[in-house]
Image (cartoon, rainbow over all chains, first blue to last red):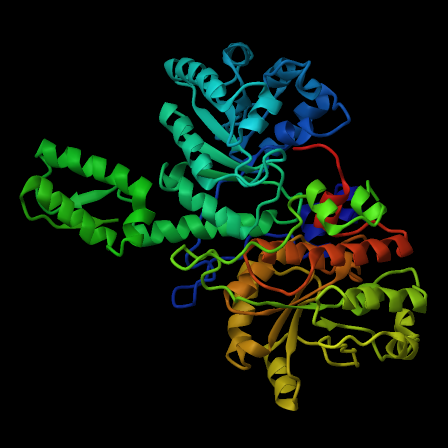
Length: 336
Length: 271
């Protein structure tokens, strides 16, 4: 692991660490107005979902004691992370590392502003999770039939049916559900995976009620090229705001792939002027038909902004045309 | 070092390795006309400058025997690489690893189509003013080095924008260290800006001399893997580079720093 800096060894202050390791510090401050933005085209904020305590530990050979897991999660809770995947409510026969899921769930500190999702592959796991105090759950699908069968012992279709049960129960209890799609950029059994298949599974998970879909390069074989192609397919089916990426670093490509994902998603957003959440109409919006039209337009735009752009239309003028067609009234729209 | 795939162990064919490791293969073929190009805005060809025998070995503690150095370079000469940095003509007091520079230079095979540059002192720098001076002096290519690997896509972009004002894009190369794991992201950023020459080191040879225990050079194998996936031509055979990397790591009795090599040599768990 190399030499641990003395600031860590002797639990000295952050300031001490900074002196030894000046590169570990606060983010670079944003440029002053007038200066060329170094992050032009990039998001101002990116949410990081910490999966170490679950996805990470699950793949470590050494069984980690429960109190160590709890301590890890508690320390992570103090870092500013807004989402930490805690554990997995699966049978301990399949995943021995996660056998202590109830104890971990009950034992962790719950920090305000931090979400603590857990994996629940089926209804039984879901009920156990809720009984243990979980307030958010995740379901794990795959874009590869072979992987689905080998990993969770059922076909993609069968797994979707199980997830639907979970999501239905979760929605009844106002529990948010996050969806994962494994093998998004390649499968250890099938090799290359069609982007269209990833998009199809993503759409099924999103339509059933998952608020976010995490697209996983499970064996880390993806590269910026395949990441771009896959995202372009998925972006046609689900809103950009619902997309997350989960890149493995097995071939050292993870950061390059993540950078690509950020660029691709933002490129689409900035060209499509997607954020129509706040619309001020110059005319009164009392016309309910107009309200409906605009509502469905903005939904459509979320899903299809890349499509609108590639057809050579400016999304803005497209919106105006559609609204005018529907309402038969001239209207000007100010977008924020 | 992990399980060496049987294809390498028994010197079986490349085809046999591909069966075991389907991800190590030829570059993705360029898209057909009409299909959306995955490499739109990226160079079609990127030259890789292999710096393992010089920059790499220079930062390894173990003094490598001359014949091993020569064998490494000869193997690299057969991979399709068009430029291999051979050695450094500096005083052996300062850089003991390069004490045998004359013997190495004389001992290597010279393959047609391959250049064999050597380092001579005081030619490194990444400030744009220095780059401009070097270029004006007659250097055909300026390699901009992130020597301690602290750069990120943001700082890479800013630095290149400044340098590009002073010297032509075609004369710019990037030499990214992976000390903070940022090398591939930085290289991607550079090639998105049009840079078409990348320095890298087989097996990621050469730690960072300023950060003990930290990695240094980015591994040639990992760079080629990324460029292959983007459909960018490098002319270099990834499998042969992995073989050369395997050779030198065995000689040095060390683990490779290349993630691609590690992934290919482990028939282990799937995450």
